[in-house]
Image 1: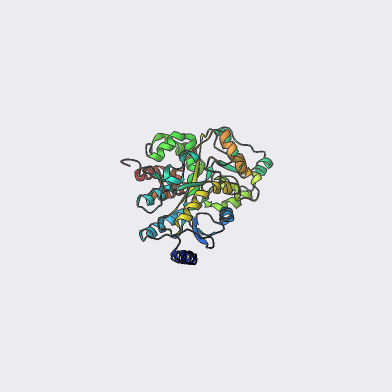
Image 2: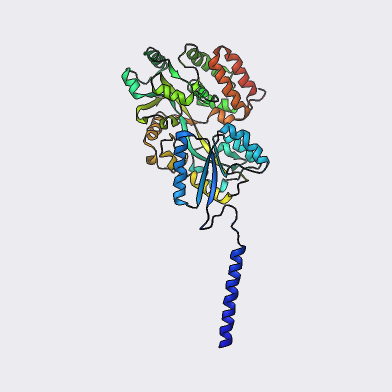
Length: 418
């Protein structure tokens, strides 16, 4: 009996010793938090100012249900990322664990070089807006998830401004021109339409909208794919008959830094502003603004910011779990803020959207506007900056139209033979 008890005691001691040894030797894999550890995820995104505040609400919502995760948010624009990341990736390092950019073409380019973690098993394509994953799909494999979607639905105006001056939304092109003349005649107005500027993207948004309206959604898509040239009559006529006359007659302002343009437009120095839905979160009173597309328009440019995980993150598992949440429930959180976005995740409840975006969503649907990809974001590469530069040149010197259209055609990477 005593011998048996002794053997049991010895066995227990051995088990305890083995367990203690294993605990000492065990080291969690990269990115796997223990109950008492904290993992910091570095997240790069394009948003600054108020837009960054709205994204921080998303990060804070995740942290509430995942207290072991800390975040460091770093602001970096798409054009800067495109310069910095290739150098980091070639050195097998990354400045962040999770990176967000609107440039799907760039992510696809990095994925082809083996720098991006595949997300195919984390994403059900049917759960997202049709076609939204195409830019980040390479050989049938998905390398990024879509975040919330912005729209560029038309010309924004202050309801109070229209009411004070007896103005109304136009139903025809002639009514649109009459509206511009009426705004031009108002004391204190510098130009009927203010044009935003940055690297050139707010300027080109106006052009895309005119092409969609007067050449049609199909021609616009063919232009992106290189099946139609800028010099073709159906595209050239949009510039000659509609845009250039408005530019020459000063219905548009000179390009102004786009956030400053919002302030000047709000003060009444301009009547209309073509801008994306995010403008609703950047004005003092979102209830005082509304928009209209050009009469007869059948499409609206929409796009998203894509979320991807670099291959070189030391926190792979935690980063992937965060991305899974961000591109689903995280979208709902973001769309409920004044960020001016709508979810690309079709399972999101529309009733949880910020009220002004519910109005936008309804109007786009009622008008039957199809959602189309952003021209320059889709073509991408060096041509994107060329497009921006040429659109700024168009505003500065519309007489150079033929030269501009020839350059855009010959340099378009998808047009065979230029």
